Image 1 (cartoon, rainbow, N blue to C red):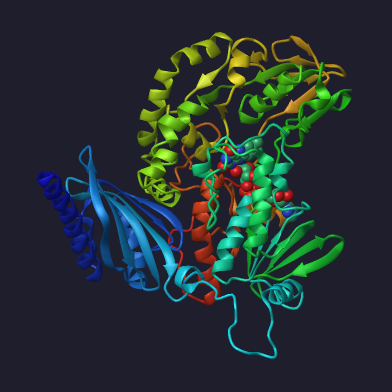
Image 2: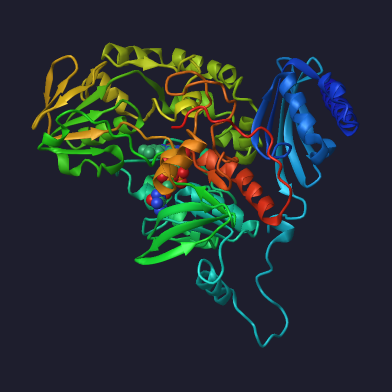
Length: 603
Ligand SMILES: Cc1cc2nc3c(=O)[nH]c(=O)nc-3n(C[C@H](O)[C@H](O)[C@H](O)COP(=O)(O)OP(=O)(O)OC[C@H]3O[C@@H](n4cnc5c(N)ncnc54)[C@H](O)[C@@H]3O)c2cc1C
């Protein structure tokens, strides 16, 4: 016990000493001295606090350039160790807090041999504009006597009647899926007048409209929305309609200005006024909104990729993209071809098989498969699980830990978990390969999360369909694609022919800047360039290396245009930084952006 306490004191002392030296060198703008505190291999990931951007500086030169540019405005101080530091494999890890001129920050520091290896700095709160939470929560009741008393309901109704009509919102979010909803909730706490535009009739419909067998592939601990976590009895893997209902409830109780049955028909930026002109059709009523900021939260999985095969127009059966697949009921006894070998393809094939359809999966290239249980235990469990919660790792804490690992070194952090999965499920993988299934573990064996970050596709979290593939219940044709579609069959690239009544294209989705092309203009879409991907120079993620996801949650090359989206974890975590960036702009806080990304790929 004595030794442990001593060790803990020494660890904490090491971190405090580093922070003291760091603080005094920063205060003196002695950048060379600052750099002496960093190791040869070093990374500084900043989420808004220093750069008003999401940016990872890799190596001393990049860190030095960032500090030279941003120190005069940022004026960081008050660096403190939060809680106890810890140590594993020669790396000391510590939570830290700090202040900048305008904000409170939180971060994570990793020291190797007394020098910084990785540093995460994040903005948590604008000092002058705290969220209406905790001490700042609204009072609700208005005590005293008042002949002009307006009730909560009357105030809400007035806001709904005014906003977008006699009063313009500062921000418009196009797309009211979980992304738009979570961001709007954050902006509400920051008092940023916002309208969410959603073409579906009800909040949650973007999930309800998906194929009927869909349940979340990620577990509840990963999926919470900001402010209102799921209750203790929430299922581990939420069925899509249940999630839809939660989003609808959330939208109401968070008092969002959510315009459902409203489609955005076009938007353009008026340079002279610095406002967007956003044309919407609200249930037949044509309205023009003039916000200062426009967020596209139209979904990473919203622009279907539909391949065009010769002869498709001659097909006499039914054909649709997976996003339009209604579910299996109508296809009992039918010959169904599902094009693709990833999540949607597997889910749809399994549901069709359960309804006695004759199903063939066409897998053109390899897929990364990981069994759900193994993923939970080996990869997600340490951060997002009941056990993690019991160990004091809330989802907020987990989000931070995940964010603190620079993307450049994330593969090294991830690989061991996926190596372990490969070993523990060796027999499972052997059976799949024996059935002809093409497997991979990512370009550099780094597994699922890296594949998701690099290309947002190329994997299946197995919840049962793989056994059906391995035993032949779901027929598999791998390494082939469709050469031609005939009225009642498809001809494959190996010359064979498969009879077909239904073709489902489970072929994924295009980049989010396709939405910018559709809603704004091709010119603006090309100006901002491709969304998502790290520039890892692996399949579907062309280089050069960018170090952060392209265009997501950060300033783009188009003034006042932002992209928001991703899975539930990302939407939750990064909506905070996007909301702070928007609030600062509304309040006129200086927001000098350091290192605005260059565009290497128009789409
Ligand atoms: C089959 C499938 C399974 C998934 N499973 C998981 C999972 O288990 N866990 C997880 O975290 N993520 C999962 N995802 C990924 C992601 O979380 C979801 O795609 C999620 O719906 C993304 O939310 P979003 O709000 O960014 O976009 P969406 O939910 O796609 O919402 C975008 C909204 O924009 C609206 N819209 C588009 N254009 C306009 C317009 N012009 N005017 C008005 N409204 C418009 C659409 O109607 C839609 O409601 C899955 C995705 C798919 C496709």
